[in-house]
Length: 138
Picture: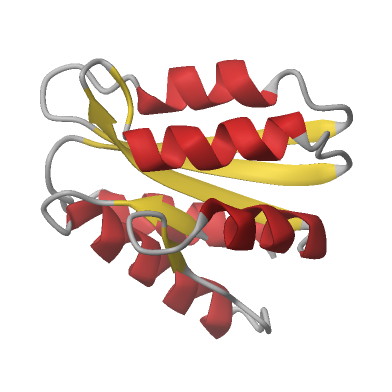
């Protein structure tokens, strides 16, 4: 799970997803804050893992810049044969997932799974959506 969070709400959703995955028996869950982790680490992990989650805030109607950099590097390295789920966060017009999908569509045999959308902070429905996403990814 690679995440970009500005106010901590996207990070919180990523942490809850990691906990739900662990509850479902998934082992070796790794989380990376793209603001403090070098993109090369995230690229290496993307090639190590079969299932990936990218969680990003919407920033200037796009992807948070550090997440965008990591995704460009992953695509440039020709990632293939992975399952990818997305979490986006945006107050007024969440756009991160749409932009992340555009980048990842160029990857061969990458299955884009579900997307969870958060509008600023998690609502009462968000934990159930994250649980469903964990079920899909396990």
